[in-house]
Amino acid sequence: MSSVSTINLTLPQCDGGSRKIRYIYLVNVTSFRLTECPNKGPVIPLYLGADLFSNTDIRTENHPRHHAKFAKKGLATKIHFSSTFRFNGLKVPTASNSLWFYSVQGLFRVAFEMYNKQEQLAVLENFQDVWKSQINDNALKMSYSLSVQLDVAISSRVCDTKPRIEMSSRPQRCKVGQELMDVCGSDTGDTSADHDYCCFPKQSLQTEQSQLVLPTVRQKLHSLGDKLSSETQSFTEQQLETILLLLENIDRYIHGHLEEKDVTEAVLTLLKAKDWGSVYSCSLLNCIGRWLGQQFHAANNSISQKVEGFKVQHIERISDLPPAEELATELFPEAMRTLLLHWMGLSEESTLEKRRSEYPILLLILEFANHNLITGVAHVLYSSLICK
Image (tube, rainbow, N blue to C red):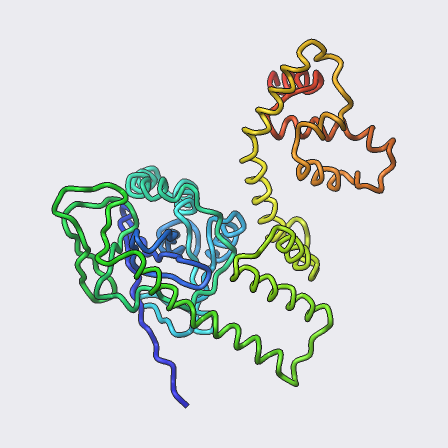
């Protein structure tokens, strides 16, 4: 029986003023790297929670509780590494082989909640460019399981090991593990953000990355096949139907045939698969709420245009507007109305009288949430709230 070789990693570190902060780059939900290269596509720099919390008033035994608090806000994540990896200079429980990491947004939040003014200034000076470059990153998941290190195969031709803080036109040398490696630079003085600091074509890099991830995908599929073939494993009819539905959608996704109705069915099936817990502590609901809020916020400009057009058409009879339900239907997206209707208990089964009595409230919520006031009640109430 062959033993699995261990990979010893020394995390790169960057200057955070009086503290040195170790980090990794999250590539996708199963892969990471210790070096960055623009031509390898977008990555997310993640900073070691232990370094962020060092020399603060938080006792070490209380760190996990605080990490979990930031994780619920999408600012931190617990990363479970494959047992293949060992970390030099870090005490990591062998059983879990996990570490807490923070996004750059999380780093700033920790700094302004726990650091003194000089330390906050140092973080601001050293990480503001990273923060700007990652401004559109999605919130982190509560945890990731990483099994693939993508820069192992190309350690001799590595790109930038420092988060995007400052790039020089001169070749730099960065220490990764115990090895000093040249970083591809330019002698032409070109320091633009999209300068190619890598030494090989983008297409070959993408192919190489795909080849590294592909074995993991195959392994997962083989493992699933083995479990389905096992005589000791039993499945309910509902479990098998759910598995089949997800596999069919994977097949559609691979062939580029995945449609909205397919995603809708798959998502609803997973949401109904089990009881996900209290609304006060359900990270799934929190994630869905965040995603919905972002989608609705992004639609604000188109809603504003529609509302302005409506006001122009009804300028002569602004005090004699259609009923609340007609207004909401005409001016606001169906998804917003559907969410609030079911939230307020006004589903299709509700009596017509109840819907009519509650709809003005629903319309007010839509007006305030979308920053588009239409009715006289909304204008009066808004003025009253602002005055207070």
